[in-house]
Length: 199
Image (cartoon, rainbow, N blue to C red; front, side, top):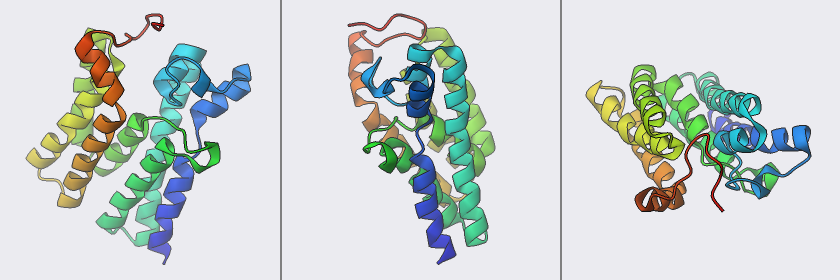
């Protein structure tokens, strides 16, 4: 029973939208009505600035870390419940019950989950993503690269199969959530980091 409760707690934790709260507290706005319309760290950066953007990024990552640890504590370390708690917090971030089921795309929270479950593979995928963003200034491309490389590194490094299957699920999840960004990348219309948003 306690183990299953980690899923609900993970979802509720994920449903805390730090991007939305930052917009309300700092500018009295619904951030989902500005910029890209996404309640995530990148849009927070564009709309509210570097400080709030970085803060939201860190807090969203910590949600993922906290959910996995809740799964660990409540299940006695059962890998299945660590994975399920990770899925729950990402679902909560993307579809938050507290904010009309309109949240972010879950990349920062995914990073937090995967750093907790598979640190080295997540670190290597993260470094590749950071280099990609630094080179192209496309945050979405870095996010997609991160989720694409994770399953490969997890498989090559022999991590538990539960974590490997989770990484595949998160890969599909992230690419589905970024489908409009993928179209813009192909067309050369995606917004670059630091550039003014196109109309």
